[in-house]
Image: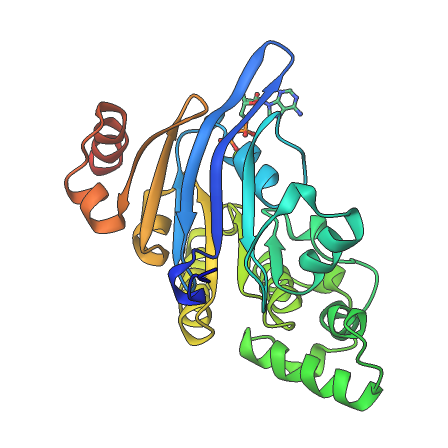
Length: 263
Ligand SMILES: Nc1ncnc2c1ncn2[C@@H]1O[C@H](COP(=O)(O)OP(=O)(O)O)[C@@H](O)[C@H]1O
Ligand SMILES: [Mg+2]
């Protein structure tokens, strides 16, 4: 049997994912592929199903229908929902990252910054304290946190520092795919700009694939190669970011783009 070369396979293949809450259809038949190293923005107004989609594909909640396949290291595409919980947890701790809008949801607020970053490494079996600490200090520096703060808890950090710490905690294991739900929208505008810049640098340096949920088209413009536009639980348009933003095809996308451009 012929095997498909790994480079011809998407990193993630999402097909027909749907979810309802009671009578409400939150997500209807979402499908797309994500390629290695690609940053995909999922945009749409509040309530359009972005978080429902992200939680389903990150295996944080089970959709009612559809499939999600991930290209596991050294293997082919594997059905995420057919994995055991232990396999899903391992993925979440290694090849996947998840950055929450509210950093408190993704950090342990009462342990040190160093431990927040080191924990995922130790989860992978690293037991050498000196190495864990050195790697944590290095990652603090990479996300522009003074390594002298390594023993402080995130409770003593500003919102922007917390979000950068959450990013370090997720990236320290060199994941191949990071899910982010509105990673900048809880922050002041000036802090947002710096964080976006940092995210852009890191995704490029690490050739990291990412799915970034945002209601902010400027975030999509800055970070994403491609975008998916959602309206009322459906994907209404997908395409290269610049093409979609400069020449939107669907009426809803046209409305989104024009409402941003208008003062
Ligand atoms: N846990 C839930 N229970 C009931 N309805 C929900 C729940 N989560 C989301 N919804 C509904 O599903 C729809 C999509 O929500 P969501 O995915 O959070 O949208 P977005 O992230 O784009 O703002 C909305 O109508 C929302 O009210
Ligand atoms: Mg949301």
